[in-house]
Length: 135
Image (cartoon, rainbow, N blue to C red; front, top):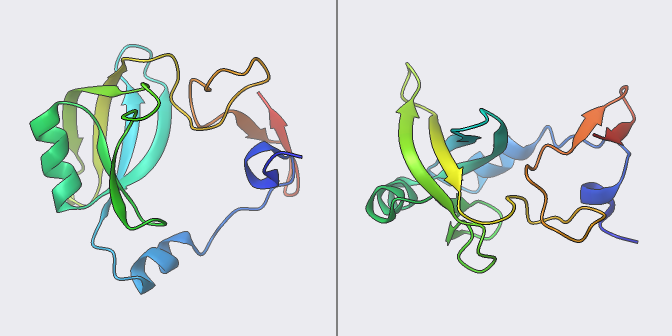
């Protein structure tokens, strides 16, 4: 079977994610990545200072992986690059919104039943406190 977390219908929220990031000492801000044309939220990631500067320099989304402790240029290996249109910052300057345009065919690292990368990482909906459904 595929990864149950990414492909299953059991709801298993990681309420400890931010605490894990803090305990590991990562100095990051959350980044919401939104398609500038459709307004669809694609996913949420993190940026440290280096990733933020690289995003500005490259003109495409560069993020910081808190689980792998590395920078990653979104789409560098898959071709699903997210071209930067604009960066917005919230009132408290503790989160970012990257307005992006897809340069590839998908966004998520997971694949749909057709074998293609999914258009967003938000491909399931909550049914109840225990269950998800594919949308």
